[in-house]
Length: 516
Image (tube, rainbow, N blue to C red):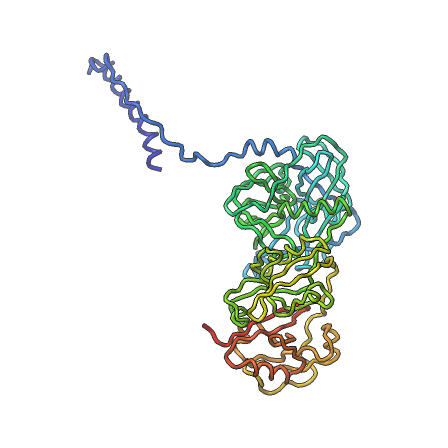
């Protein structure tokens, strides 16, 4: 910068001038000046341009000893683990253009990316998975990620003082990605637990971990956002902390710290389309983790509350179709039979706006709120139905971890479709056979198969052949003729909400023939 350069160069120029004057005196010239040299004027030092930036040395010195390295050893027996979405290499067929951005869990050297597609089982080879952890009590309890130790035969802990221990896995929870370990030691340095609910975007945070096996590496950044949902893994009960802290393989399970040296999160994932750090990292809030720890200590497992609804996010078209002024809330696409939601009177197409006074701005906000509550908790739920607010009360069940999925969507088969659409949206429906309904888990007279779409608005809304329409608005449909009748009754040129089943999931789709 110009000011800095001038401040440095000016004394050098003055020193050079005095030296020349001295040479002249030695040769007999300008003797008076040589005998009475003029003092150099005082020059103020340049201001420190980096003053005020944080210095994390004291923080690291105090909390560093509580950070440990975790080595999860996989034995000779093949282990089956759920793989995370992995990108293709640059030289793979298709190239980077076909690689979507994704959340990735990361391991240290010795346990690279697991093969297989999203959600597919993968065989874990023999080797060692390297990660990070931190001590939460002086008698040897250590916290790390579930995915660091998942499937391991032996878990070893190396302390900052280089002592090593074989750890016992007290319990592990896949949904929150938290694992609690125990080593046989006492008097250990302990990480102080903070309050992740107080975090705000813009605050400084620090990570300590073992990226690529480099123990106790320190990186820093700021909180980018809080309450982030994770679209790339089935962790809908975790409101992630997003940061720009540099995180890489081996940082999994390490602490995210505030400037007080308190742990506020567990580093867990990165968002990347290359496999490396790209400026977006995610941590599990320590409040979520400690809730899991309490239950793992007591019972060895984690239980969560369940409301019993399938929900989806709102958009402008959905809000318009429902007569709402904004798109805030979680839209109920399905109410599970016999669930707390059904007993509370929640209906399909209700929009959930808050639970116990805690606002639900998006569908991703609801699962962490409900999941954080114990089964048996009674909750107050504010919904909007037909444009009018209602308050309902529900008593939560225990979340069933079993995942039931339908066997895909049937191809168009059976009765021939009509030659032309009989409704204003240009959707050609086809009656489902009894066999197709059984495969889809539908009841008799439930659902209409989309055979073809001729309407532009329906295509732009994302509908496609093979989808099954269950309802138009709140009205169930079970035949192509009933679908046509309901769409005609909705009126041409008006937004309409269609309840659609695809691939085992059910959600509302707003079709807006009128584009603003």
